Image (cartoon, rainbow, N blue to C red; front, top):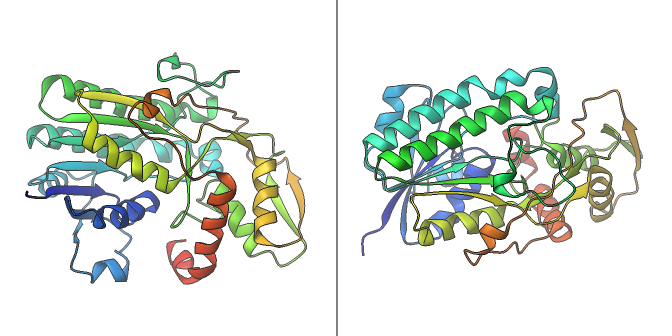
Length: 324
């Protein structure tokens, strides 16, 4: 049986690097990955098991050339950053992300790719007292997420559009906050998990400073659980289009997250909350019933995920510095 040709967009990013390693261990796939400014890691670059392609996903010619000849495309490339940019420079999450996904979706349609997986997010949801379902989106968004959230919705609708007019199967995954090995750990660009890990592990005094008041809540999904779902959806999806929530099914306040990270680090640190720094004020719990119907369930919960990530961080200090 011939192996499917899998293209991973954003192969040197956080989720992309984990995707590459995950699917290299699956003999059903022949793996190719795209990179742009960040070079492929040395171990994978020399392995001979993967083909790397340098491509600018805002260039139509680069996109068409990269997509051609593949069976499956997983789109993990994006311009991303943390709360600082979301609040002060929200436009950085709009233009490039809209352009690159529009070009990728058209190329996949024209090249008759079998399956396209788009990694969306949950910024389009408004907080509710109950777990949020996929069809709960009503066009109302938290102001800080307006640009990025509507860009994601546009890309999702383009997936649905092309699923109606072509042969390509499309999956949109609205995943919660993903964390784990190869995450962004620099303080300027990382999300709350990666930024807090860095503050704790590099603390030179007996305290750390956390942005906001710690009341924001996050559904935190360990990256391996996301990867196992992507693998499963590629095997089992029958419909031409699926839009699915994916999360741990639990939420934790930033305060709780910081306290647990400090506990598992083995350090004794005082926590100070700086309410002058950006804080989005977002609380959201996902309903993941549709994902569960595929036979998937999250297996790595917060305490275990923290321990795994901190062990990886401690063993990969140079890799962390290089990715920052």
